[in-house]
Amino acid sequence: MAHAQVHDIPRPTQAPRPPAPHPPDDKPAGPHTPPSFRTVVRHRYCGRLLFASVIGRLALGMMPVALILAAKADGHSLATASLLAALYGLSPALGLPLLGRLADHRGLTPPICLGAAVVATALGILALAGTTHIPLAAACVLLAGAACPPLEGGLRSLWPTVLPDDTHVRAAYTLDSSAQQIVYVTGPALTIALASWLSPAAAIALAAAATLAGSLAFATVRPTRTWRAAPRTPDPLGALRPPAMRPLLAALVFLGATVGALDVAGIAAAETHDAPWLAGALPAVFSTAGVIGGALFLRFQPANAPRPRHLAQLAALYALCWLPLLAPLPAPLLLVAALLPGALFVPVLTVASITLTTLAPPGTSTEAVGWLSSAMRLGLAAGTALAGPLGGEFTVPLVAAALCTLTLATRITPRRAPATT
Image (cartoon, rainbow, N blue to C red):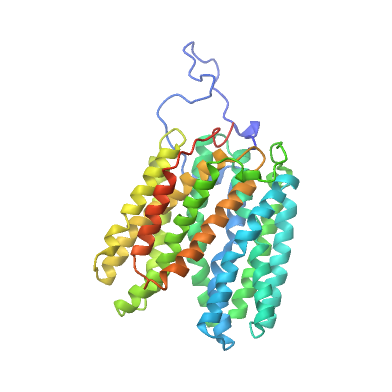
């Protein structure tokens, strides 16, 4: 892990009293006040890094909907359109760990710029050529997904270098997890609006431009250009070497499956209640609740870093929150019930991210977050694929959440603190 820069660390006050308010571990005296999102963003470089990362990842929220709309506009069936969207959803799971490992070896700028150039080129071709020729469209989609720049992993590798202590880093992790929800709410809405106003090709072109602009803005920030991973021992397994990493990633697959199954459950509920608006409203309420839950979690989180048992406890509570959705509720109450698991999703993902960073061997932080993203995306695809044949029942996300909890019951012992100061 990278170390916090000295000039960002608060200096002790002059002439401290004999009882030494600052013990050797630099733990501040007095009551613990968690830093707010605003406090994190106001640190030097943090606002630009977060904003650029969100813009660069906007295509992840835009492209699945854009591909379905573009394929249907070109006369393809919904099944073909869904296959293209699924291909885009799965291909980053192949590329992110590899680009993350390259970042850990060579620095963040080369893989981010390379990935952005490939994504912009592939999506540009797709916007011009359309989806009429499925093999060409599939190749463009595969390249655009697999070359997705490692912005999430890069951002989480940079947090310890631009923030003064572990408490701020944990707050930044929560902020980043909340920002992801914004990507997956804003992206589809922006795509639908642009496709209705202009065309699906315009939405694809915007996704290409956003990836390129966000990635370049991120890659040119000084901390990104100067960051280097900690020295590491060559190991083919890389971030996967710690045995506890594997059950954690398996749990993240199940966590992602809950969200993938929710999208299908929303469509099924819309048909059951004869309320088409429910298909989009249910995932939107879930994601909005995630942002609120992240803010509340930040406000009331303990002073010390969360432990693996805290992750298992949060996951168990997350699973229990799916139970009300099994009741035969009217459409408005379904939205209210979706607030419960939605509010727990970001805290679970945040603590999982901290645990994963803790487990990652030195010099593998970006690759480790790439594996996290891969696990989540595999889960999203699996949840969507399984929920359809099972009728879109809310039982599917409930079972996935329960399996996530059971998997986390495996002993996961961190090797060191998530960030050093």
